Image (cartoon, chains in turn red, green):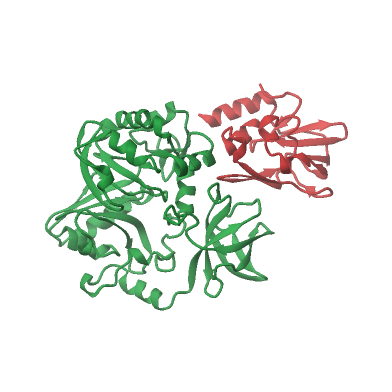
Length: 132
Length: 371
């Protein structure tokens, strides 16, 4: 089971409420889809600067592997406070630890409600179904 | 997008699954894109040897007294002038000069063996059979009766010879073919061709033997550094070697003249008229754009569809791109309006509003004979 302290999207992002802010990242499944477990296959990650306003479902960045580019979509609406500066030069942290060290952006959410997103059990089921 | 139930499988499908390959939908086929890291697989082929499943490609045989004449009526190259036992790159174009596919023609004494792309198999067959009407020849679809694999890399001669009897494979010159006994199977077509820029072979044999041939080659090739290689690395290898891929450099809207594929097109009077000849001559007389190589030092990889700018002026677009582990930069191919194609021209590619510097580079990016 994936971490239960956060919620998940069908496009494989996660969001976790952290005090007045929310952290957003991508799941182990998303990373594996991009690089098949070969972290050297990740080549680039574009993250937004502070003060960028994002709507729920809006693309906030892109992640690129040797063979593909994928959009990063925000699970909830808010204003970007900071992005994870470690990612640009160390894309491997996304495969090593997508849940903690691999967070991508911290936002000030419009609302702390995560209604409508999947919990870990539902996401596990969703991934298992899409892998069939 | 096809789902798993409708995707076609090559005879080696389960072998790939057992090797732990990551499988993708490629033109309706469930194919291995990689067994390990894609860039490592590129390096293996450049430094040792790779084994490729090409079962998804189409294999046709035009047989009969008019076979060569018929092929000359639809193919851009001059089939009658190909020496017996030799192979030539060619295209099948429509009247507008744009290709429905690019192919290899194997010239036999009377007949022509043709290898086509997986994604165009069906329409190639319909096209060939339609235009064979009125000729004394028959187009046989041998795709399901003959499997195809490739051995590519500098140790391929040693590996190929170790499993071959009755044929000195080192004597088969580049773009020629012969027949020999391979892994005990008689009359296997052995072709000194490939899609990687490396020395190597493509071989054709009954699909009932596929798993045994594949596994025997991997076993024999172990001491020569042989590894199975997926379609991901294959795309990078062909791009580094400056080889066109249907759906990128050429397609229904991109003619082979502007793609720089003149070596596969004959305007010889004796060949006579063929589908697309007039249109290709017109493009040759007045081309509007040129295919070029692009390199970029930036992190972003060129991708099909990215627009290219020279200052504020839009001058073209990317059609292929990859990370290149061989020349250690990101590479691509692009169409540029004429006047911008000179090597060294500084451009910018637009990635959703962000610009990254790139430059027109000489082609091919990699040549094993030009080190």
